[in-house]
Length: 142
Image (cartoon, rainbow, N blue to C red; front, side, top):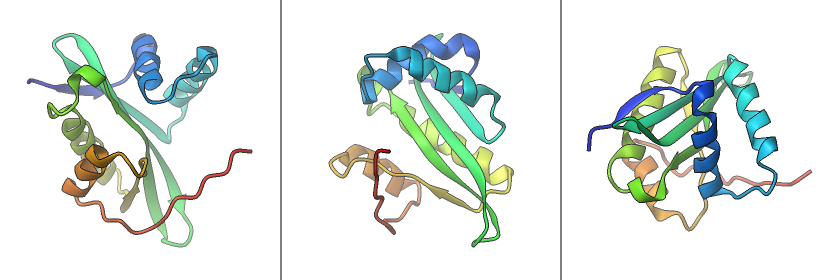
C-alpha cells in the first residue's frame, strides 16, 4: 500500500474529525472542530495526515514544549489514529516515522506517548519504533 504523509490542512478538518470519532465519539463534534482549528494555528502543534490515493486514512498530532528539568524541548504524541479499514497495513508506521523525523530535525530530544493498556497493536507499534515502557500515565478529568 502506497502511503503519502503530508501536513494536515483546514480542508482536511471534516475527515480528521471523523477519524477522531473512531477513537472517542463526541456527541458535540463542534468542540472537536474548534480544538482542531486552534491546533492548526498553534506553532507547537504538528498534525500530519496519511493518504492512500487521494483519501485521508489517518493522522498523527504532536505537541512540542520546553522541558525545564531536562533543559531541552520534548514532545508528546497527542493522537495517532488510523481508519479502522486501513489498520495493520503500515499507515501508522509511516505516520509515526514521519513525526519522529520531523521532531528530530526540530531539536526535540524526547518523545512521549500513551495508549490504552489493552491496545496491544499500538504498543507493538511504539515499541518497534524504540519507545520504552517507563512511566505510568495518570489522568483526572477537571
